[in-house]
Length: 80
Length: 140
Image 1 (cartoon, rainbow over the protein chains, first blue to last red):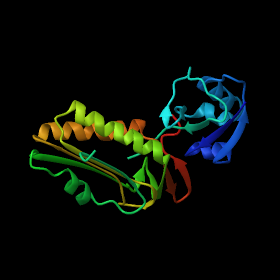
Image 2 (cartoon, helix red, strand yellow):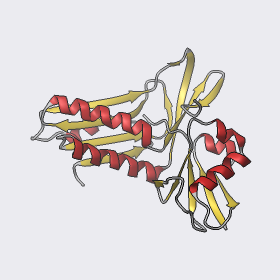
Image 3 (cartoon, rainbow over the protein chains, first blue to last red):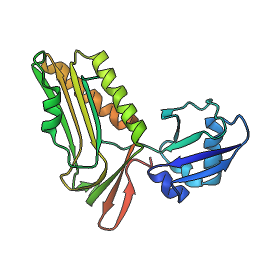
């Protein structure tokens, strides 16, 4: 299935794009997408943390993503 | 929810606006935290900061913090205003104002709010130095 990936902060620099579409197995979880990202873009391994959000909420590793969902990469936050 | 004022703004922040919102007759203590742009980070000279937010989720997460404040503390009102965009030295990045009946709770609630904001709200800042730039906190 195809899913849309949206990046912010340093993730934009790593992907060299704000958005991209990836193809991943049906029923993929947040953990699967993290593995995909780290394998495809090794600089993600070096970050202090890596979270993913779906539907404007942080999602745990076992969260199952459905096709056409938008997955947002949340690198370490630094507000304030 | 008129006890909570959450805003992401691309214009200069003004702590007086947050304080005006939280001021109410049930409260005798208002504590405001103002986060500003500092010139030196680990000895390097900062020229400016650039803030980027995943806006709908940032608003959601700041609203969660405000609701937690109202649940955990005897707070009546809270305002959280965060800046996005480019900020010069001394510029205000964040204003958090909490009103409680007594000062002790207001201090504690305000501290909880800024500490939690720094951990959960999807906002990123890039420090622009004279000789390069870095996304803050990205690497351990």
